[in-house]
Amino acid sequence: MSAGEEKVSVYVEPQKKRSALRFVLLIGIVSLFADGTYEGARSIAGPYLAVLGASATLVGIIGGFGELLGYGWRLVSGRFSERTGRFWPVTLFGYVIQMSSVPLMALAPNWLVFGLLVVMERLGKATRNPPRDVMLSHAGKQLGGYGWVFGTHEALDQLGALLGPLVLAAVLAAHGSYRIAFATLLVPAVICVSLIFTARILYPKPEDLEPAPPPNVESKGLPRMFWIYLAGAVLVAAGFADFSLIAFHFQKTDGIPTTWIPVFYSIAMAVSGAGSLVFGRLFDRVGLKILIPLTIISAASAPLVFLGGFWFALIGSALWGLGMGVHESIIPAAVVTMVPQQRRPSAYGIFTAGYGIFWFIGSVLLGILYDVWIPAVVILSVALQLIAVPIFMSLNRKAAS
Image: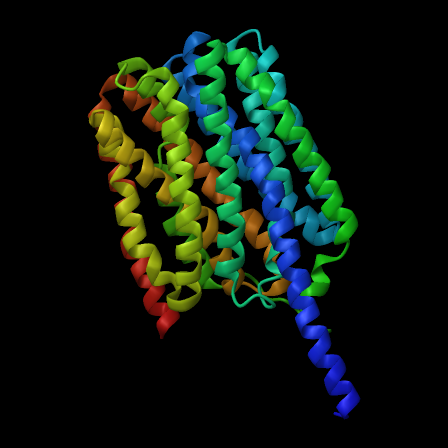
């Protein structure tokens, strides 16, 4: 290599690194406003469904079916984007669908229409997430690790999830109207859509941030480690109570004042965001073993939120947020390390589809059990998550060998 070529190489690499960093931060800010919108809505969806006359079983079915479709549809979205290479069009379409559905909740006349809008919001998220995560993964090589990339993105994501519920708590305190609260979310929704279209203009080909795989190399099927990892993750998903059921419990038992429910959710999101940064970096350093203690800790959220008083419920909400942060940051980072670059879209689609199916099954079971005997909810939730721990331990041994 000549001196001139070396200078060009030294110049190009820092330039690519800066470009990758700006891309991650821009998509993170998009997610900040997206989460401020839809997580704000989710923080009061359970209590509002109760106001509209829905039972705990219906809340579980609506939340669970929303997650089922929201994760299951990613199988379609992931495969479509992999086969066509149209990552940006699929991502943009998903954001428009999702950000349109949330403000419309202010106009829902009954629980059925509201539930349909909840499902529509999940469908939009399912459409845009696999191609967006693939585009984000291209920045990992330039920025020192996939855990850092997804952890940083999740931290900004969860900052929005923190602020959105707090804004709605203030609106509810001032006006006492759920409809006004949902209508307020039109503002961050418009900002989110504007920013994602800006990102498309500035970064038309995020794949250029990562070296292309060698030509004429066929990507093999998904490895065995991927399927083992999926088995553990779906058990955690099945046992992880949706916050809509938790908020429903707070509303029904009068243990938590209504205006405090979105505050509890905001605290959960704050813990989730901070944990994403810390545990994303730890994942880059120590690998999958970090999942073992974090799964045990997050399993403790169920007895605290469903059986405890105000302060125990607050701690439980924080631990619930920790679990969400772990699975929103480490899970996508781990998938990238297990599969060939060409198969990432399908891998994300398959993984999240399985995750969503079991989330749905678990949500329905937990909702039904809630109407029968609340301690049964705690028992099932904790048991399913703890069963996943030996699977993660086995996976960690295989990765180390």
